[in-house]
Amino acid sequence: MENIFKGLEPEAVFRNFEALTRIPRSSGNEKQVSDFLVKFAKDHGLEVIQDDTLNVIIKKNATPGYEQSKTVILQGHMDMVAVKDDDLEFDFDKDPIPVVVDGDMIRTKGTTLGADNGIAVAMTMAVLESKTLEHPEIIALFTVSEETGMDGVINLNPDHVKGDILINLDSEEEGIFWTSCAGGVNSTVTLPVEWEECPADQCSYEVVIAGLLGGHSGAEIDKNRASAVNLMGRLLYGLDKQFEIQISNVQGGTKTNAIPLKAKATVAVDLKCEENLKDAVAQMESMFKNEYKTSDPGLFVQINKTENSRILSVQSRRNLVSLLRLLPFGVQTMSSDIKGLVESSNNIGIVEIKENEVVISNSIRSSVKSRKEEIAERIEAISNLTHAAANLSSDYPEWQYKADSPLRELMLKTYRDMYNKEAKVEAIHAGLECGFLKEKVGDIDMISLGPDLFDVHTTKERMSISSAGRVFEFLCQILKRLK
Image (tube, rainbow, N blue to C red):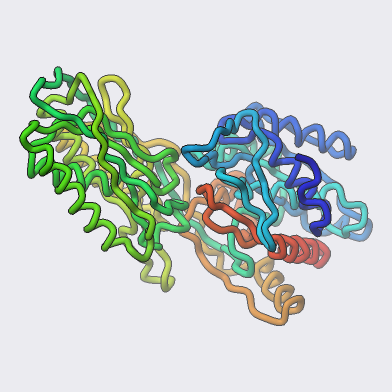
């Protein structure tokens, strides 16, 4: 598995990135990669701190002539979203990522790549190990569990990170500098349910909605991609109106912050309605295909006979169907200030039955705090009406645009000098750690950038090799000009 990226430039970036693909680093399982970074720092004679949360902070002194320059914090997260194809035998806790070089792209064989945000770690490691790069004092901050609630940055000790400028490397489009991001909060809806024995005169079927593209619930929520959980809510509501179906299982999604690719439910109807049920499912599949023929051309709905011994009670079924049908999904408001920017959204990331309760996980985002609160209140009201409870967690702040930013102006000029074209300054409808970092390290000048990544949080995730090279070249030039 070694030297797959041999010959790719910058050598240090891709060597370090390849090393990261061999180390388990799914969110919540970062001990090995955290220890790897500590060893890296010690091997290079650098000062390092590993805190109780497993965040790693590495300090590199300024090169000669830069001793009086402002301290620069380079920041990225070491964890990754762990998603694989259903038919792939793969264990994220021990198997190396099956990376492939495909022309200008690095991709995988059936798993997420982890370029979000492994490429930030690799680039920063390359800066730290360089013997020739000119730069101010560097504080490298590698955080954990960004993808599942930003626990790393939440628990960061501000005394460990002191700096004047922060460059976040968690963006996904070259030539775009992010200067603002959405805040967010997770809303977990818990519905108590009761069970009954399935009547003998019922026939049971498993209905599966799959073939969707999915994607990041922030950066790609505006692409009108279907959510398998949202569609399952529509399907169950329609079937229940027509047949008064029985339900024994509903399951969909894998990550709160990923648009669900697949959902399944086990339903039962009277034997005399068996053929009508199949016809109704086929009609809904046709409707869904028509609605999402452009954004999700691979969408399909399957129905297969199965068996089950228990069903939800009538009231539990009605509550569940109503919840899935009413919970908001997708873009809720657009920004009035920034053209084309999603202001607020909700993603129904996961639905699953756990013993005597159904748990539905929502990811709410907004660049306006009151909009975020409004969506949370709406979910709470819907939950109350269906005898469920909604609880909030992992609340993270928005990062507001800074009118006066010397760093932004330097980056715009440097980009123009290097590439003879203009970079874009934009806001992103996704949660970056910059909001929390603003609270932790103070109102310092910060910006976010990164190379071209595609379909992150899915098994189609890939990264442009040439773009990663240019972004690293640009980062090095910025550090050199911060004298």
